[in-house]
Amino acid sequence: MSEGNGDGYAVRAEGLEKRYGEKRALDGFDLAVREGTVHGLLGPNGAGKTTAVRILSTLVRLDGGRATVAGLDVARRPREVRARIGLTGQYAAVDEVLTGRQNLEMFGRLFHLGGRRARLRATELLDRFDLTDAADKGVGTYSGGMRRRLDLAASMILAPAVLFLDEPTTGLDPRSRGEVWDSVRALVTGGTTVLLTTQYLEEADRLASRITVIDQGRAIADDTPDGLKNTVGGDRVEVVVADRADIPRAVEVIARVADGEPEADEAGLRVHAPVTDRVNALTEVARTLQDEGVAVEDIGLRRPSLDDVFLRLTGHRTEPPGVRDTSTSASQPKEAAA
Amino acid sequence: MSTRVRPDVSPEARPSTATGTGSDARSGSGPLDLTDLPVRSRTYWLLADVGNIVRRGLTHYRRQPVNIAWQLGFPILSVLLYGHVFGSAMQVPGGGDYRDFLMPGMFAMTMAFGFINTATLVVHDSTKGVIDRFRSMPMAPSAVVAGRGVTDLLVACAELAIMMLTALVMGWRPDAGPGFLAAFGLLLWLRFALIWIGVWLGLLVPNPEAAGGLFVVAFPLTMISSIYVAPQLMPDWLGWVAAWNPLSSTAAATRELFGTPVAGDSWIERHALLMAGVWPVVLTLVFLPLAVRRFRRLSR
Ligand SMILES: Nc1ncnc2c1ncn2[C@@H]1O[C@H](COP(=O)(O)OP(=O)(O)OP(=O)(O)O)[C@@H](O)[C@H]1O
Ligand SMILES: [Mg+2]
Image (cartoon, rainbow over all chains, first blue to last red; front, top):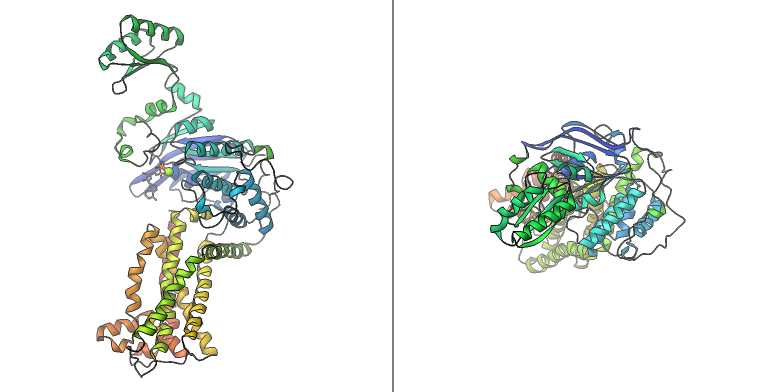
């Protein structure tokens, strides 16, 4: 059942602009999300992910460009858009004082389900998100994962056509993260389109069938996870040497079999390069290094990760999980992106 | 709005989670039908939305009775302490009983401090993203603020009732009758005006901790008024400021209505009843637009 305007896209944004004073949070941002898919919006701190989600979910006005959600213009028909979307913001927006059930019933009534239906819907969602046991406890006592799931449940009350998830697993432990991923997958099986922002490359890789990479308010790539990985080339052979002094020799050896210039990571004692004939290249490198008496810590083939993609596209890595909002992100050289 | 929702996800779409709790025992006969939601007018939904926000606010108090105890504790304690400790030492112009003078002042003070409550609750909702969630839903955005206001007025009624009972127990004997009701109304009228200051500040301050700091601002504002001491007994300039404090007009007007008027000689004191009606209008005219503007700015 198509909710859109028949073109198969649940979300479309063209040239979105949003300025905060001098700062261009969005600077000609384009996005197209196919119905019934999970679409990842991947970008570092301050890239404009939240701003994009807030515009698409009618929370903030856009300064330029055009956006439709479920076929409806977000600027002209916000009320109707709101009846078709669910939003889980960057911070779990549930009422801490109420119980899980009271939360869902309240949101259900505010979604205009009426009292009886809101109660039934709450019970149903509590069950579906595995919160039945904690249903009548105050949300203040919930774990981060439970809170997130309640938050997801609240945004699912109307079984929306489009669901926006802004960093749904940030700050969660691995187990809770897995739980949220399961819930998201289940929602998509049920026909919901999901736009998911994340800083975790793994998350985008696992959940999304298509990924838009955003940096400095602009989409700098849009492809499938595999397609993105292919843009940095195919497999790479990678060697970790025991002694820093051996790096030049490793570079030399790898260069003989590689398709491209080997890259050396001095700090990690790592040398790697793209290869086509994977197995032969690996055997060759291993044998030569041994013959030349280079002590090798590790050797292997590696598929490029989205992290590599990111580095290639933006000139800087995404921050490792857990060090958000530190000075590392602010001091990354952004000029390299151009 | 009947066709806009799609059928629910299928039962097999249930997430299987690592915990394994809450087994497959699905209540009812399958997904709820969300396709024929009732069609009603905007006004109907606005009122319903306000009602639901109020319900939420009152549920908060029900789930955290300690909060209302705190909220009432301060004024009740003030009634007891000021009444007993200063009761004999304080004089009232015209020679009335200090307790009769103090009680209406305490009521007005409780209404005045109410804006801190409003601000604290609003700042919680806005920093925790709850207001954003409301705004992303098809409900009326104005219901968020209106619901807050109605809740706070209901709570104010409860506060006044409990304080008045305490005062009666302590021997306060106001005139019963229409004057009493009018006084009650004027107190709520003041509280109504302060809702807008509370909402405005709640959207202005950056975090709940900062909202707690509002007490530091509010305290001198209640001291420099006729709540505890008649302005005539203060130094000239201070007395003048105190007399023009909107709280003084409400306090003086309710003293009159409770049958224990305190004569004053300045224009503002002689027109307390009038000004107890006018001041809240002025405050509302100033702060309601500010609050609305601040609320609108959320979508900037
Ligand atoms: N309300 C605002 N006022 C001023 N600047 C803002 C505002 N909201 C966002 N910005 C700025 O716009 C840029 C994009 O912010 P946004 O929150 O969209 O990034 P993000 O990709 O979600 O980052 P994060 O990963 O940290 O959540 C940032 O530089 C941010 O400082
Ligand atoms: Mg963000």
